[in-house]
Length: 227
Length: 284
Image 1 (cartoon, one colour):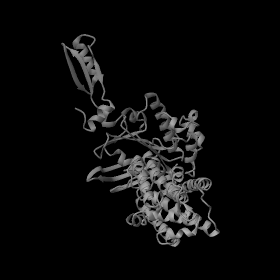
Image 2: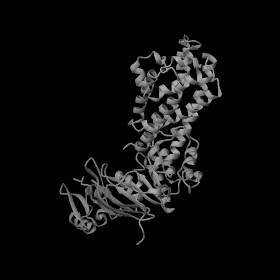
Image 3: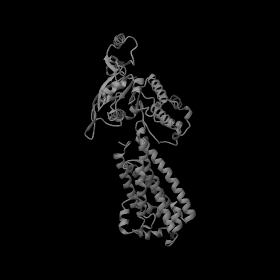
Image 4: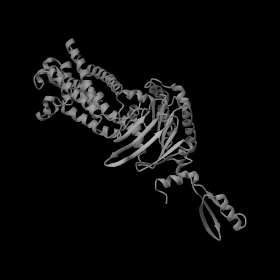
């Protein structure tokens, strides 16, 4: 929905050969990963906790690992579908060009894989915070939208105030959107980015660090039942 | 001495510096239906959750089917295979059918019963393809029981199972529980329905303020079977009341005195409710 609205409105060119629409679609693809992973799990897991589903599973011989693997598979499936749709519409309606080299396709692939792992781990970690399913919806959705604003999804990142850029750079979404831009936009656009380069290596490291933070936090804090 | 299915010695559990469970000893044998009766806040749910492995005790020795549920270690999954917990859940899996959920849960266990026979046994055959969101409360509880027994448990935990049931559904449910007991399942149930304790339980423990007041069979609870009967009647324009262990003889004496039929005669034996209320300190 957002894709259609924003993509149709902002058709101006922001750099030689690149329209805002293309910038935006790349950002939306990164957002798609966050949406299928983090947002989905941080809301659905507290709801499952409320329903008593988790407590019931805890009483069966099912190992917790199975539960989380199941979630990871769910997230992967949703992510793949979302991205396929975004890429399809992006290409058809907004001139998104597909990655131009095997290297870029490979980068796209690991960005999705590590990005999904990262948002899944963070989603599971964050699910320990809300006290109820309804509380979760109320917290998580606004949080994600605010983060999207800061991270250069709805506006060109470099046009945001510096303090916002610095703040956003702590979190993985800014790096994921930058990574997606490096895959879909021509390399000439690099000059427009903050560090004048795609910073692919740094992106990978930051995503991995957040994934580990998410995993550690989940292991320590995951609750199967509300006390 | 035959081992107990459940053995509890000196169990305590504190919340916010208050004893929810204040020193409980209990032995529950294999193959019996055991009821824990008590008011809300008495510690029944905490005790049962400790037995189910959802909480750890503060002190005391707990053995369920030979293992300590709070410290299972590598026996965790083999222990969970042997128990069944009937939980109340609302709203989850609303779009799945009864059949789908029962078949799904069967896969968690290595010795699962045949899902179709469990569906039949819990009286859900007609509703097997209905979505869970379309089940009534009573049917939902039957599904909870199905999920509790699908793994062929040796021990089944039921927490206030018939809350909200109409009398007919209640009795049908009791039949189901009795069938399970006849198949050899040990059953631990918590309830605040006295008629349920009386109908189902081989033995009852009354719990209040974190302590066990008494454990005995429903007929003998509180010395009920030997307690005095209460006779009330109308004589000389006034209501009379008398407690006696020999009601028959007393009625004969009164009858002779009034010369025949005794007006508004009632001979009342203490009900389980009377005994229970007295035990938990709520009787006048």
